[in-house]
Length: 490
Image 1 (cartoon, rainbow, N blue to C red):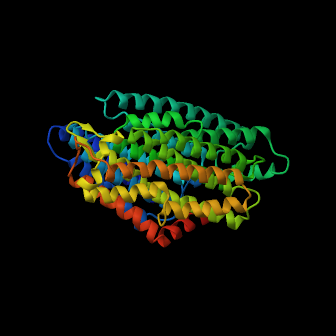
Image 2 (cartoon, one colour):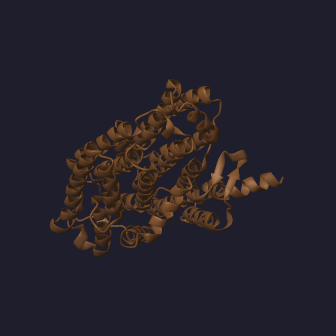
Image 3 (cartoon, helix red, strand yellow):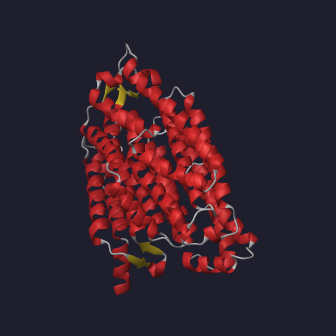
């Protein structure tokens, strides 16, 4: 009994979020009949409670025989996931009211999606990781296809669902090979047996970890799997696209951190820095090039998301270069976590832009529809400036700080091709992000769109702006959190 209560205490944030989702689902039918935002308020209350529990009441330690751990890394990613849920709930409430689509199950589905991230962040066993990633994948796909009156949203659901199935196949096959060699799915035991093969290597062990990494590359939308992602994000509603893009990246990178550092993947006889570097460089450059000729701002932001994923992956590639010391690798991985913390606000704000520009019953997506927006709506314009300058990586934004640290380490590791790819991708990104700002402030539109003056949208945009600017100007707290999160893995 004591063991059961201890396990429940470690899982308390997840229990709170799941319970909130269950309450929302039970109340969905009656709430649909009334013109109210009770569903969103229930979700926000549950997320707030989960945040308090994560910070104050959930003890550190192992649960369920060590297959789940609550440490600084888990708590950091849980809080990031709760932040994603909060921003997406506010934006979702504004979206549903704007299109008069009273389907409040959006919020329980969103809560279950971020629960997948929270489980994946603390999983120390392949089976529990599979559960977390599948909850994340199924919930995320449902979010993308939530707005069923839109054909593109249904298309986004199918593309995401099919790609998720492919990723699952790779993941299970990789788990099978690793289990066949090591006889265990627990990270500690797998790492011990990987260390026994460190000198000579084992082809099936390396193949198994390779398949697992490929599966996670699919999930974080890295090259060559980035093409489907842009289609899916473009077709989905803005709040769903923002939540999906951030949640999948958080869950995928959380799994990568644990598998490399705790399951022993980094000790395999595989040139991870080269393989991950190829995926990272290709993702950055190709996604940036695709974004340059997009007239659809939503699709452009989708490719911008993938370019940032490429840079995050570049940090991983650099960290596992044999030319860096353990302390240097830890510093690079801390920069990756710092980048991810700001990524939550940045991507939510980027897709909030699409949720703000509104033409009666249609959201503005095309570049021409943003003409003059900055001057007509100065408050929204300032928020957009902060978001786009951060997306472009201008100083003193957090993107600039993280990129400087990652590129400096890449030069120390003598990964010059990857460094060049990152610089080229960043320069291209500055071009197409500045293009939007030029249109917003220096072009006129005779058919001026409106900006939805809803309280949830204004609140979300305020939180995003404060988060993006605050992390860039005062990065100390976020950096310290990132360092402490990574340190527990080494």
